[in-house]
Amino acid sequence: MASLLELKNVSKIYGDLHALDDVSLTVEKGEWVAIMGPSGSGKSTMMNIIGCMDKPSLGQVLLDGKDISKESQTSLTTIRRDKIGLIFQQFHLINYLNAVENVMVAQYYHSVPDEKEALAALERVGLKDRAKHLPSQLSGGEQQRVCIARALINNPEIILADEPTGNLDEANENIVLDIFRQLHKEGTSLVVVTHDPEVGEVAQRTIRLEHGKIISDEKNENFVE
Image (cartoon, rainbow, N blue to C red; front, side, top):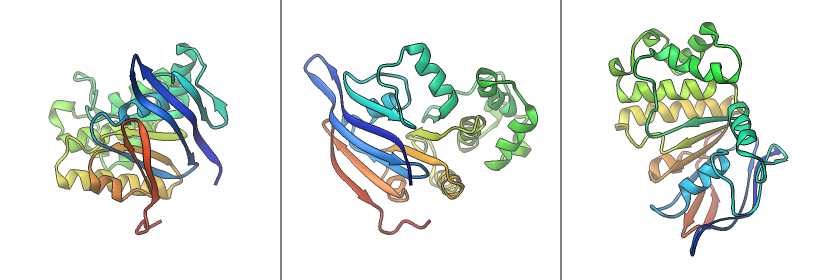
């Protein structure tokens, strides 16, 4: 596999606090990685840097071979739009738009909205029949699946998910994880930030953070391709 994402000696420093402290890691194309750790371990800081929402204080971040660590905010916005699909714990859906329109919003910022493509994205997550429903008419699990469809619509090189099952019950958590399994089979690269051991254990590889440092980086021996 070829390298998709590489962090080289990355630190994020706020005064005396090292939110990330000399972190190095590589994510290969098509790999499914879980990033785990307690609150304050640096998970969210790492996600913000990988997701082009922040820049490191020190070190390099390479995405598909391009060093993004010194790019301007305008350039980072373009890279995030073109290459990264973001899924959040809070769904960030627009209340007055229905499901298919919420998916099309991502197309609007990328290229041209296409309802047929947006419906196909909803179908991938099992929600084509709910396309005309407003967020208030959808369950939490359904809203999260709309978010996944929105993240997929522009064919990103990497899906970055921050606590994607944090607001879901067990049944909906399993639905989301099944979608991730299917995306992995299709060759999608996944980086999932989570504190949930069950979510971490189904990934191909688990990276654990504490106090801004990587304390373990292990392949999941029970992972099923």
